[in-house]
Image (cartoon, rainbow, N blue to C red; front, top):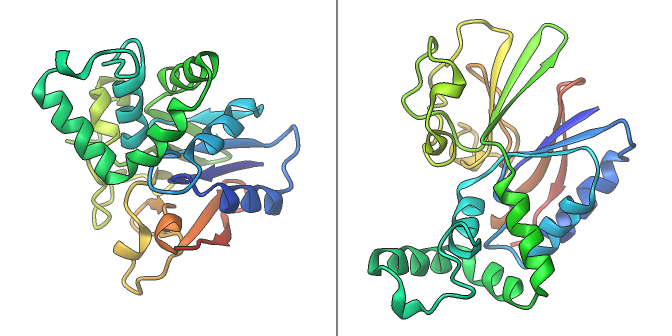
Length: 237
């Protein structure tokens, strides 16, 4: 089975409880739509668990990208660089990230040995920004946030890296006219999308939105591609 999960945001206990419900085997595959880090109590533990697992495809989220940008050797590398040497705009962005839930991630990251730090940065560096899944007659396009400037005739590989990780999908708009093509996203909590404001997966207009706001007290959801069903664990504020 193929399962899609998004926006774990450091909710390690809920994440582990959800995996227990899935009863994963070696034949199963996890697709994570980004944002494992920030806000919740144990972001680094979530990332390290995913690194150790087989059959995981990770799609980069905006919080993951900021973490990688600030701490990797190919980014600002603030773990080793003197902050006084940094551009003021970069420092302002860093401060904003910390205030938006990054402080817990940063503290836990700095407690790691150098090898484990490098392993996490490499994990995010290798992540894709979109993935396509085919199941029978259905096609699922997986991204973290949406597709900025979307036009159906533009191939996915022609969009910019950032087009997939920040701009929220327009859930009132059907992106693909083919009813068997679905855009699967996280990033926007489903209570903000659904008319009933429930913390459950949203499936309308060719969208499957699966960020059910676990870190805000909603739910952590896994969507099963083959069965078109959802598995939930309640979040704790």
